[in-house]
Image (tube, helix red, strand yellow):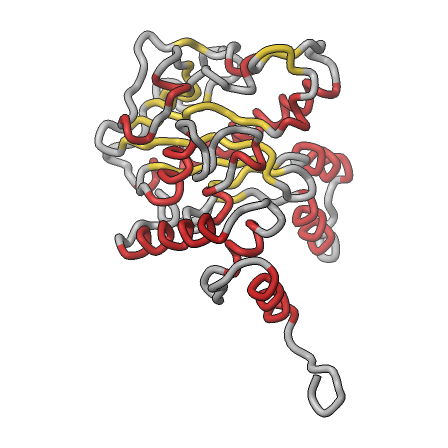
Length: 298
């Protein structure tokens, strides 16, 4: 209040003040995004401070936010609707194509920026141990996804824009290959799970169709990454991408692909347990110049 009248401030400033006054100490313009995402998750001031320290460490080391130096992100369904709305003002768009596009984009991919606070607590969104507070190997994966220049999270969002699945990828530029530890999945999409990654539903069920669309979103994200990587590295393109099985929550989809004859390696400090302790499957091989499609070679 000022002179008996309420003070008007921008909503962004009001939001930052809310988090500063009611949640964490030390909220600034630079870390307000961390406070916003951490709020309501039961996380302590110590966790907030630790994440700020890790982020600063990455900045001091000039770690790029994306392995490829650019954002790779697919539109959400709401963004697609807005874009299509604008397009229809100047051109005629097929109604059938519009519907198919929106249907496919019930789930969308994004190569998450290393500066994004979700990296530190991904397990809270994908029902896994991938948080910096984890007592398991997920702690190492969470830290690597935020601070290591050769590790990045590929996430899938639902139609509301919420992160509901992720795969953490290690990229070996020298040898031209990559390994994804596994595909994690929010428990909402695992309600028919009878064992790790196995579902007691028919492949034609709505539940399984959701997982099919989530898997396809992962595949679209990988295709875009491969295309951009090869464009930036024409003399040394990607030759193969493998994925681990361990706690993989899309086992039915992955088992349609080809098994590896030998696993691709990942540095031990990244703790890719699901990829290193279990047989890997091939998501992409350059000889085919595309991501595997149901295990069928072309």
